[in-house]
Image (cartoon, rainbow, N blue to C red; front, side, top):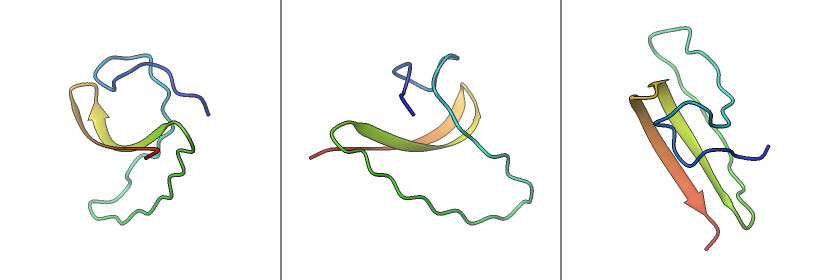
Length: 57
């Protein structure tokens, strides 16, 4: 997957998601950014999200 956009604050970014179906949940992910950046978000909409980002080095 190739990222687009530089922020989740505006529409038009690359995003793959899954809707949370229950009040409680647990999730796990493995990120391998290689020489680029990778990230995870807990997202409601453009104005409400928590983001984690990792980069090489």
